[in-house]
Length: 457
Image (cartoon, rainbow, N blue to C red; front, top):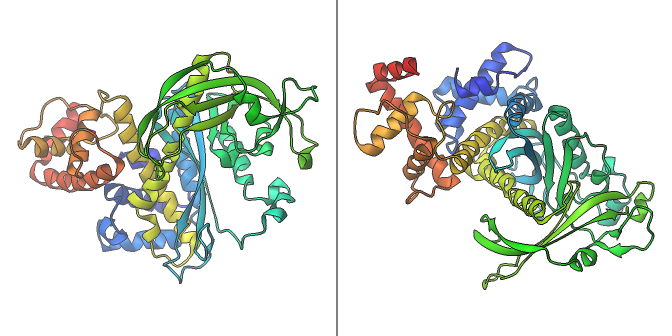
């Protein structure tokens, strides 16, 4: 079976023919993630089938994500600790004025969809799969004062709670799962959610909440000032990845941490205080450029008894940018915002298909970075690595032994325009498309060699 067949083996779309069509669609999109639908489709019938599949109201987009989540949970079972990174992004379809079912987004007068994703990653920062994805069209924005008076079930922020619940249902108590979120996730109702024994939080604080040193104490102190007053426990170098607001760099951060109790705001006085560990990281040597220095205050339900655990939590939080790269890959790599479909539900089904494609590319890229000497079994097909090797080395004889995953990803990046051995996601998705053309030609000129290698393995 192809990797797509294995990944979506659990898909239940109500009809076997729909499942087969789904697998064919994802295979085509995975081969050419940056291409338009006509360019990615293997023929005209496949193109029409793709559009018909996305237009079919009987196809549940959530069922596609659930099938992928089943395999994601299997990969998570191989880990002792997994990060469940949550974040929200927007898909802007303002230039598609005829598309129905869109809503307002952050830009004034813009129309599009909101997408909230849960991306599972290993403790080493390798994406393991998408556990949940929620798509909605936002109605006309309410005033902020009106939103504060609403119960959590009526707010958009309930998506954080729903995503946590679905994650816990999928994983259970088999693996320790740390839910990671940025300042938008600093929601007291989220901290107060019922959690399984293996479920923890690691969230960047946004609200300067009232705190005490123990549950019954009434001597309240502000969160940020309390942690800033703690003694510095040490410093270390933290690798920061590139974002739209900063260049990649290594920051030297001082670390303070303490245990305290968070108290609910007045409008949630019925909720109980919550015991957390607070970790403050401040950049000691700010960059000379216009970039703001790092100042993270993290709240976690994990026990932080020493500097080593505080350092581990900060490293885990630094992996939160993975989900930003994932959303970037969906929009720029898979060009999701260029799809011209008539209804928002069709866009949601297309997103579910591309969600698997984007994860796969990230899994290969970051898997190669953390384990460059790893095997390519299950990652590249024999025809792919043979065509890649022969093209790069200008030979018509592939080696008897397959190259490592790291070597292959370097070569794929070079096909996409990367210089040297450092390939970014952009060069990888471009190189991947060129590789598929090389593979097709290789299978035409040496089908027997491909078959013999597959039999030997």
